[in-house]
Image (cartoon, rainbow, N blue to C red):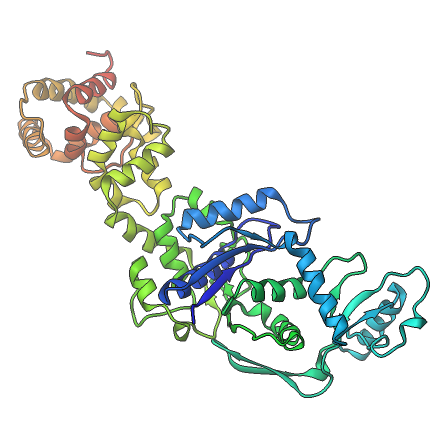
Amino acid sequence: MTVVTRFAPSPTGFLHIGGARTALFNWLFAKHHGGIFHLRIEDTDRARSTEAAIAAILDGLQWLGLDWDGEVVYQFARAPRHAEVVSQLLAAGKAYPCYCSVEELEEMRKAAMVAGKPMKYDGRWRDRDPKDAPAGVKPVIRLKAPQSGETVVADGVQGEVRVGNEQLDDMVLLRSDGNPTYMLSVVVDDHDMGITHVIRGDDHLTNTFRQRQIYDAMGWEAPHFSHIPLIHGPDGAKLSKRHGALGVEAYRDMGYLPEALRNYLLRLGWAHGDDEVISTQQAIDWFDLGGIGRSPSRFDFAKLDNLNGQYMRQSDDADLAAKVAQRLGKEQDPAALALLTRAMSGLKTRAKNLKELAENAAFYVQPRPLALTDKAKAQLDSVEAQVLLPKLVAAYRDETQWQAAKLEERARAFAEAEGLKLGAVAQPLRAALTGSTQSPPIFEVLEIVGRDESLARLADALTPAI
């Protein structure tokens, strides 16, 4: 059997972090088994589905590196097929028209509320003669569900779960306007697409019992279901925007690497021993349903930052430099890109994400004169700096080997001659070269920036300029 999975989001908003994890688990399960991973856009809710949301979902999956097989399936376009299945159920006596009015349904809701029970359709049209139908009323079509026994699901994560059929009612398959319901469309699409395994959030577990009844009514083999616990915030509460329930594009904008976010999402609810940093190939090799826990996982930005920092330190310098150059608007500047590449080894150990990395790297490619932070300006405006820097510039003008070690050696000799500690020289030097009081090792900065640019920046910092 070829394993076939799917990710089936509704395009009513961005690709949120929980949806991204569901997509990842389905993608990995298919890859692990050498199978197929499909993408289906469940756009039957025409009032809420938008092209912008569809674009955000496709873009988010592509950025995460979760490629799907074949063309994207759009559920709304398959509505005629869904209606065809309802016709088959009607012909087999496994579905029936229901002419209940809005008022009758409201009475059922109120009665259920009084009894402290969930709303349940009472089946009043289940065996009624269609000749009793009120004139001019278009019916909904309901499934004639079993009223006794149990519906059982062998869940790949939750274990065997069951519900008494008396707790379920005859669900609507087709609305009075002829449009299919979500429950029907999902089952028909999964069957027609040959889906063998459905992996989704455990908030869908109650839907599964109802969907299983449609499979049984059609005589179709149901897929294997696995319902994964939801993601909670660090405080154990339901995940919200303040916890990190943001669109995937927000994580990209915040500077997280797609491979780091994939790794983090993998570890939210799935484990392989004590392994934390897991490559994509390892994830494909190791992923199985047995590694998924039954308890909700907790989203933790601190852990994501730590993991992202590890991935950044392992990243290729040229690749990181290209990403930083894009953030700084320098992607079309070969000289800036080359400079950032040389600087990257000293920068990437000091940042947790690309946003920080770009902020820390900006001084390398800023035009002169550099914008100064308040602390840097105060440092350079001091009498000590104005006395020291001209002498240091003169010493550096004579340096023929513009290398970090030689530049540090020259600075140490200068500081000793002036009766100062090295820091007294390095700090104004840092302020002049970077516009800040924090940076990578300053003699490394001198070497990377280069002789001419370094001397020019030092000259800019002096009053009067030399």
